[in-house]
Image (cartoon, rainbow, N blue to C red; front, side):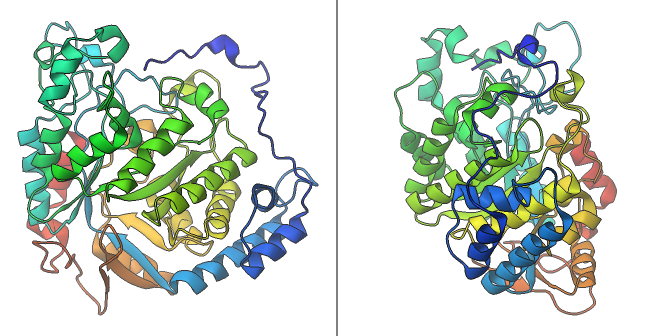
Length: 464
């Protein structure tokens, strides 16, 4: 899939003529009463809550506080006072990508990676052996989750059989070039999964977009693809690439990506083969409040179909500063802090079948990230060690959090810090004054993570 974005399609006033709009026949008071009673909310209910009422323009601060309070009370009823986090590493295999998403500055045009390219690239590609080394080093530091989300490198194929099929196909249609065309071979998806499955680490990888890339040019099902990946070591699937699950928005911000139906089909298939899932939303660009609630509705319906396989919902506020959407004048900023708080709160109230809602310090920063833990969220991400995607988009909030950082911040708001596994099935309350470190990992002994390598080592890994 390639980008077909046309600047002339952007209205002069920046307002898109969307079919899905925040208009309802419900009232804010009725919607809030349903939320407080624990009744299942409709899309109209969600729109009234996330807008603080469609009967007036703008966000009503008094009404907003009532929504946030209702969400915080629901959080307390569902998960209590614990705030969890995970010891994890981001290992993004490659930045090579031709998809052309306008909200992204992570990618580097794939032809700049070819052996005969006469120029420089800021991007990177890791071989399976290099990925294994990165994970093994992090495992020594106590991590037990590896998150891997990568660009759609044209030489990436599911396995050797897939290479043979793609080599015999129309390369233009399948966005394929053989590995020998590139300065560095990323290997296959199966090889990368196997390489990153070091010890008993939990491998969280292969978004629906990557799942589509791993079956392009074939008649394979998503079950076929995710089944082979699970056999190679994949443990769970990140529900990124969702952005907004409404195609009229996707047609603007990521026209080269899979559509809503494909995303949902891939996620359902991954759940059907026994993989845990997470779900996300990336909001605050050209979308409106109604789009956000329709997205929540589709996630809630998906959770029913996968029998509860979605372990957490992750709202991701659009970071605009270095993205094509901002540079081309399609947007002039991202979501406001009030919109961020309401997104988290309504996610908690609407997703009555998803137990955990995350607040992202990478997107919001420490201060607001902590505030949103009192708006319905109960998880505070992970240690990360390296975070390229948000950083390249202009994120300013860093790439690493130590266990001591987490304990200090979570206790500062009167909550209980808890180390958790990726799937939330293992949890450890953190007691005492520290220093603290991970204890759930296969090689974790409670020592502070950077005591094994040092802050300079972590920074170097992030900048490679």
